[in-house]
Length: 104
Length: 104
DNA sequence: ATAATAATATACAATATGATATTATGTATG
DNA sequence: CATACATAATATCATATTGTATATTATTAT
Image (cartoon, rainbow over all chains, first blue to last red; front, top):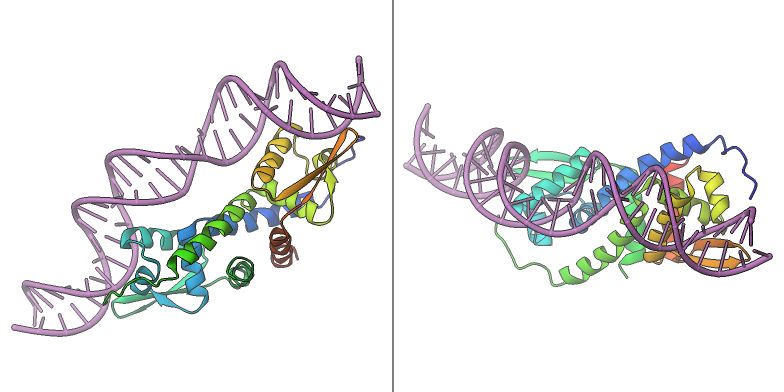
């Protein structure tokens, strides 16, 4: 097949893809996906998440750390507890979409 | 905080999460995401994809292999060429969502 | 104030598992 | 034989996950 110059938008495409794949990577772990699913329903404390998902505390805290690093979640301290919520509206939209596709 | 028994639906949730994360993992690589984006616009041959995305042929073929393994794409041979298309309608829906969020 | 406890985070080690690109070669079709 | 595509072999470089132990911050009780 005859080759032509790559389309000029290829850099823009790669840049968007890079942003999207960072998020997708964060979502591509069952624990983190379930965490975000729960948070998409409203903010929850760490101990609430621990009970809801049956994940051990250090593991939970680590995965929440990943989500914080990716800036997908916000935190709010109230006394001894820390409440997590979904920060990025794009992620909220994605989660809604995933829910409708995979949670019948 | 007082702990209660994990919710009964936790297994169903984990099962759905596992299905979803398999797909998310496949999408979480820039080359593969861009491939699927192109394919979401309609079927394309390998050499077309090669030109569109400026990926070398063996790499391309490998990543297409991953998408085949995950059963996200279909193939159709026409003469010497092989045409790929998006197989899973859920993936098509996800791609549309991703496009609207990350490709302004 | 101090001590005890609860909620969360971090550090670290151990383990398991892998992703990606490149070069070279194989296969099928025309 | 040339074209289009796939696979294999290799090299490189890395990461994900879990568990145990400990640290931090805030509250409550003394």
